[in-house]
Length: 140
Image (cartoon, rainbow, N blue to C red; front, side, top):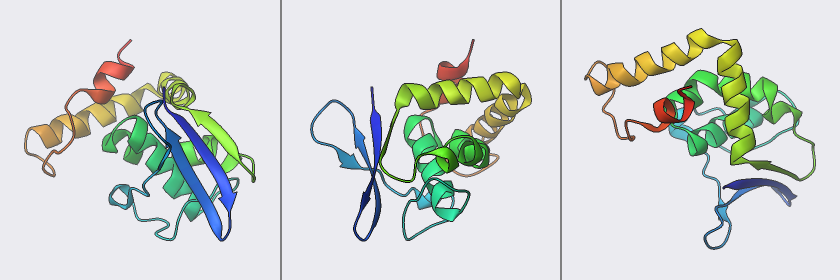
């Protein structure tokens, strides 16, 4: 189980991942998912830094399709509501939020699957992600 930890450090905010295997690693910005805050993460309000954090967390737990499709909703539902100081968030908590969001908004899940399948059929960008992550994780 991954645990994500946000820490306020001078001169800014850092997010680390503990995978239970070795030392914590810094969460990459994942600018390829959306370049909202190239200067770093933030949280606790609605803005570019918390949006970048939303994309990076979703991209780390799921895949680029999920991150891009749910990034704004995850920003409003999670990263903008994290405490201004330090925080912890588990992979399971992120997964549970996504499952609940998709339960309430079932059309979004189908849109994600269509984007995945379109790219795998050569209708979009070249695929460099595994084929199964979200479909296996989110199927009832």
